[in-house]
Image 1: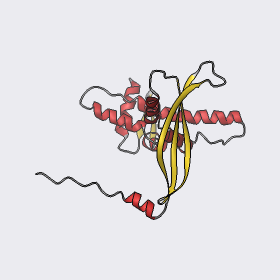
Image 2 (image 1 turned 90 degrees about the vertical axis):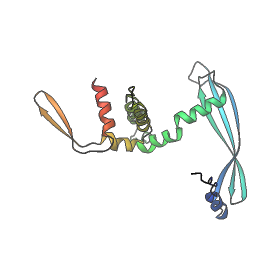
Image 3 (image 1 turned 180 degrees about the horizontal axis):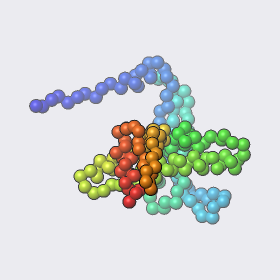
Length: 207
């Protein structure tokens, strides 16, 4: 049975922002450039790609002022175009999410101790906790077969988890440790829907 095509719904959010005169940022244009850059402590030069974003700050229908912001990308990739460098970095790294996780998730950007060196050690240790999460996800196998696509989706899901969600799903599991004969038995005392992924990794690491 043929149906009528749906009409594009009205952009209610944009209309409300204009009517209530909320302050908004509107991207007008972008400019991209690149140059060679050598940090003071480095012997070799790197490729620095810079984006200039021309932004207009508005309130309702009135433009308040123009704002210019710069974003820098440093790389040793020489073959890609400048546009490809930016798209790859934004698509792969998710810098804002990473900064948020390092700040609020593992608290790597806090300075709770009294010296610069001890704060550096604290930051390294907490950042390693974040790296363990990434290693955990990348270690999940993708065996060939009918479930390969499903396993790949689960792997990407774990890789994109926030650190707190990862801890609740795979780390903070109530467990009973039993010593029987010549071995230790770890008995999980609760269930969650992610244990199937957990046991897949356990089997892989035991091989």
